[in-house]
Image 1: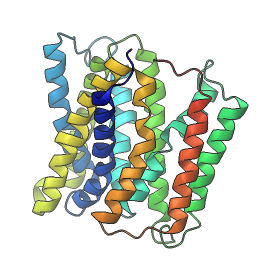
Image 2 (image 1 turned 60 degrees about the vertical axis):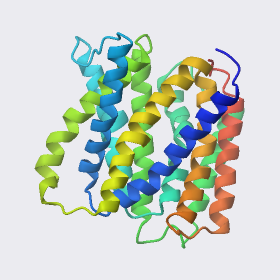
Image 3 (image 1 turned 45 degrees about the vertical axis):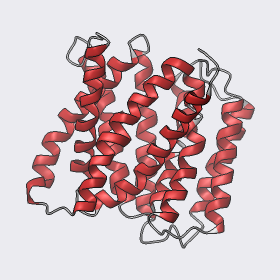
Image 4 (image 1 turned 135 degrees about the vertical axis):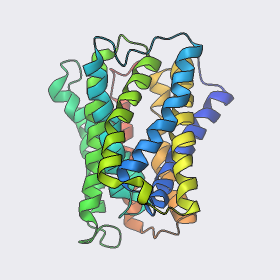
Length: 295
């Protein structure tokens, strides 16, 4: 892996902007679209460039191979379920709050990895980083302007979505010998298979009367925030490695707050900013002492 140049840094920032902007677009999309349908359209648009990428690189898509059950389980836990939960949660909380809550995914994943992966035990300093990060989350729940009796359950639902990302990530490790493009494409195909009947049966999307703004946001989520973003992620992983790519975790909540304030006119309190600093500090301490993360 090479040292990051100007183009690499630009792509990393672009990826953070795209993923950070996803949250206010999710909120706008939920004004007209139900959560399962929203998730379904996202993964359909995401699957198209991924399939094309595999075809161009002559990578076999193993979604229906003898290991289909692994791809199906990851598609369910790492894509379908969290996409739906995040849509449900973001509909009732500030979009930037969803971005902040989702930024703790590396910390949640480290806790689960400690118990289920023998080579990923938490050291003292890594545990210290996790505790600091989660203390920032706890502080958010004391800010009654942002989280109160009307929406706290939706904040918890968003955190649950983040947890499913972690579970799916741990399951993905069982396919670490497979090509990244194949795993992502195969699991995305399975997420479509899970979400399609649920959307048609539970939500009856043909009865909806969506606004233009919600439709544009939904198309943005599918084409840009999922499809294009995953292609950029592939490029960064291939050229610069995993350690460089994970730095995007610091930038996403920052851009989420910026978009929430300037685009959605959401209220930002000093407690939110203080909590964000604490969470990012916890992520930094954890990553700084995560010696197992190699390129």
